[in-house]
Image (cartoon, rainbow, N blue to C red; front, side, top):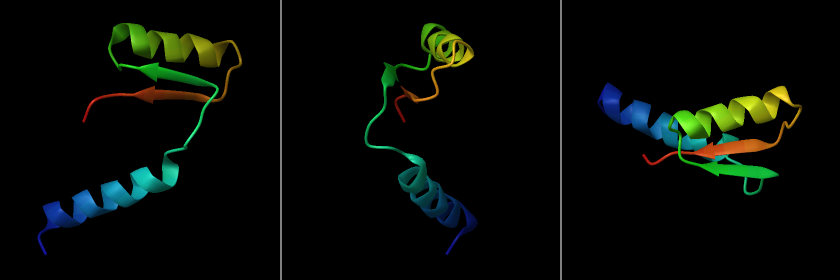
Length: 55
């Protein structure tokens, strides 16, 4: 198996372990507004924030 294929498999497994099925806040889009919103929410004490980005 090539290193790239192993990396993709590991990435998939890690994503499945880390990804939660619910969150207090879900932000769709990791552009400047989405990232800024996530940043400021965590600065205000919100710890259950998920930011979703395509790909």
